[in-house]
Length: 185
Ligand code: PRP
Image (tube, rainbow, N blue to C red):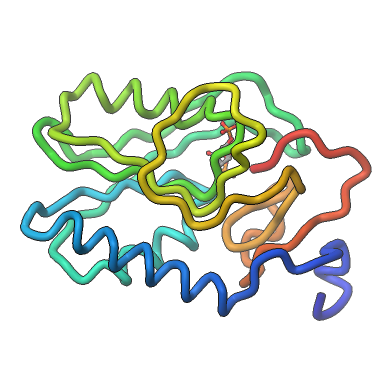
């Protein structure tokens, strides 16, 4: 919405100011809930990169960070039907308080797979924090402890969310006008 590069964005769904405010609310809540527990926060790449970086800086308690790379989309807007975990956390999760940080929860396929893999390590607790929740699209039940925003079934880009690898660096969440919309990521 600033020039030709983001001309595909027809509407800003969540502004930068709204993101900053909500991330700080979530961070404060996590700090309260995990005080004295040294949680490990695990960002799901690539989509969660912006949210993760902002969120961990909004949690003013000792914590550790790690990453998982999960992918279920290709270059378009449709699911590839399979979740690929191409990088797993290096941190041992056994007995740890783990918080998985995602950019968007859509069908729940990705997070249900991540939860299953992490649970095999017997963490002390396992919580999900998602920036966006398209709850109307859910196919797999996922327990969400922290949620930034619930959004309608629009295809959105920005703040980590992409289309074909592009638009992740938009500082807001915008509604992309696609020719066909089925899934988001
Ligand atoms: C997106 C998003 C979630 C997942 C959500 O990842 O980051 O991981 O899809 O969809 P689901 O609930 O239907 O599984 P994507 O596969 O696009 O990879 P990315 O994080 O690299 O963008």
